[in-house]
Amino acid sequence: MLSVRVGGFPLFVLALCFGLSGCSATQRIYEGMERSATEVAIIEEQFEAGGWRKPEKHVQFLEVDGVPVSTWKRAVEILPGTHIVKAYFSWSDSIATRYYPSQKLTIEVQAGSRYKILGSPAGLWLEQAAGPQSAKNQNK
Image 1 (tube, one colour):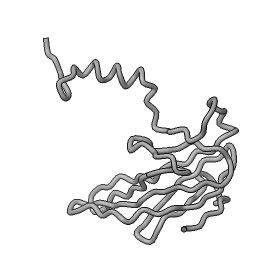
Image 2 (tube, rainbow, N blue to C red; image 1 turned 135 degrees about the vertical axis):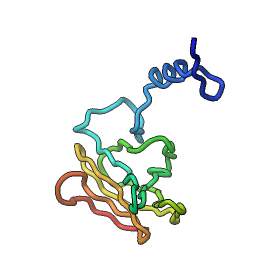
Image 3 (cartoon, one colour; image 1 turned 90 degrees about the horizontal axis):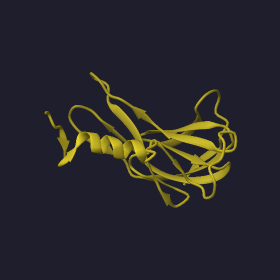
C-alpha cells in the first residue's frame, strides 16, 4: 500500500482536517452571528499570477481595524462603514521579490458590495470589484 505523507502526517489526515475545519479564504472581521451577503462588504486582496516576462503582483492584508488577518486569507468580510486596512504590496519576477512598506488605508464600504485593494510601488487603493469606483479612500 502506498502511503503519502506530508510532514510526518498521512495526506488523507491533513485533507480531513482542512475539510472539517471550515477552511475559507475569507476572514470575518466583526463579532456576533454571521450575516447575509447583503449586510456585509467583502474586500479582496490583489493577486496577479506572474508568467513569462510578467511579474507576480500581490497585496497582503496585515490587519483590519486592528484585528490581525491570517496570512492564508485572501478576503475579509466587514460591516458597512469606515475601516482602516493595513496591508503591503509586493511583486516578484524570476530574479527577486520586492516588498514595499506597509500602509494604512482608510476606506468606506457599503453593504452588499465587493471591493478589491490594489497596489503598486506608488501605494495602495480601493476599487469596487464590479462597476465604477464608489468607495472613498485615502492614504494615511
